[in-house]
Image 1 (spheres, rainbow, N blue to C red):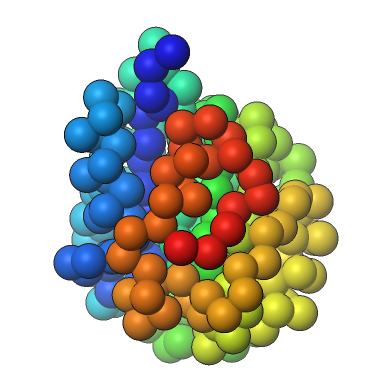
Image 2 (cartoon, rainbow, N blue to C red):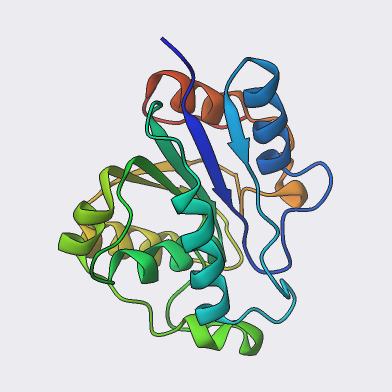
Length: 192
């Protein structure tokens, strides 16, 4: 069985050196999989419509002969929700939404992504399976808000104790559990 093609969607300001998304892209590639970690335009001042257009380009390039997996972090989660709410969209096999920021208090630079569409039917049109991962102590999203988001979207949630925003600041460079999920759908996801 071949490894899937993994499309990684970064968040606000991108996924810099040492971030688990970069590690995942490199590790998947080293093990014979395909990984795409696009750098969306103006990550410090993102525009939803521009990012959606760029996402469409990357989705169109996904090969049909492999499982297609999307792994989104932070603002990338809301990029995926906007994609899923549209008609006539590309479908993938699995999606992992990691550490979405809180819906009620977005930073001014990311306001074009809010309000975010909470469309469970659209999410199912966009992907066969979607799962959310939240870190306890995330400064950008309370656990209550993360659980409410998962409930509104009717998807499973994995809670990682002490994982914060699941980024470099929280100690997430290498994250073997996300690689296991990509390779074999291992759930629940666990901390690093």
